[in-house]
Length: 488
Image (cartoon, rainbow, N blue to C red; front, side, top):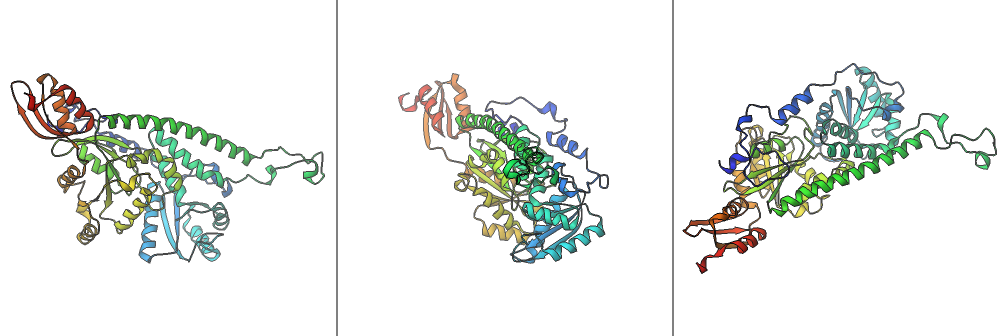
């Protein structure tokens, strides 16, 4: 069995020994196929919700999107850029399970501090909401608590912003315990400054001089309902941070074990829905979930793979990025994004069929700037979906980016070239050794093939003469067990 045939192992803790034969399980559905079937088994049905008339209570209910109107503010760039941003918001809304009815763009130098789009546009938006029967307005930006409240007062329906929409998608798609904790922490961090009270009857009341001398009868309950909510949220956030820290320790332990074995690490990063999971499946046969939707997969997946010459390396699929990725998510998913910072090589995947792939590259690199050490790691730009891309766009990307490989994860075109580039860009081994390895230590020769670069092998009566470049750990073990060729 060749190393390339052994890519179906599904353990996050990479084992360099030969795996079991999984051919007998070929007829079973892949993990990604089962997750996709589970996700599609329960879909939101439009028109069956019961909306509260008092929109000030929306933060106490789970976000439910059904019939929505989109609105954006165009402050810079071209009209095409503004339309592409609103189109991406439409895809986000549909991923969250909503039906988009209408979209508006307001040209302004900066968002209105009161209603985000200005009083006149807000009234026009209210008329459109009433005419279409929409129950939600989604704004293409992050709104302040005051903007949310005042815009809701005008349009008379629930208003959410781009950040809350992305958080809702993450909450739907998170599967692992760590992923759910990270999303909940980000949601609470976003919700805390946006809590609203339930009316003046629960406002803070004090007695004595502070109450204007009212005295008896002027003393209230002390801590109000909204303050109780804030305190509980802070306590829950502290608990989640402790849980994430504990799970981060376990992830770092697995990463350290792989590092001890000196296996090179490659991270797949890029814009959401660029085809990262499809590329992972193509390179390793991992079978993770693949869906034509934004943020389809959130939990990082680590699989082992081999170069054309048989060198072992790990391939990690990370969470996708998007323009204006909420800083709450960047902070909450910091432990997950460390997979990028600890990699030896980054495969930066970009959707070649997207109307503006260069903006995707810029958005992802903006997030890289927040990850310690990510900017110093070698990067290969992998232009995916070549079968659906415009040849002119592909030519422009390959001309502007230094290290570019054009592939199609769906058809397999360009994958062999990508493997060859990964082989060339993986870190070279700085210890060269030529030694006689006894036949009873054939495991060291096997390790040299898997973990190093074998330059020559010769079998003699006393053992195997091995000429290879290896990492320091294996070099020291070979020196301790084997004999220099010159002494035999």
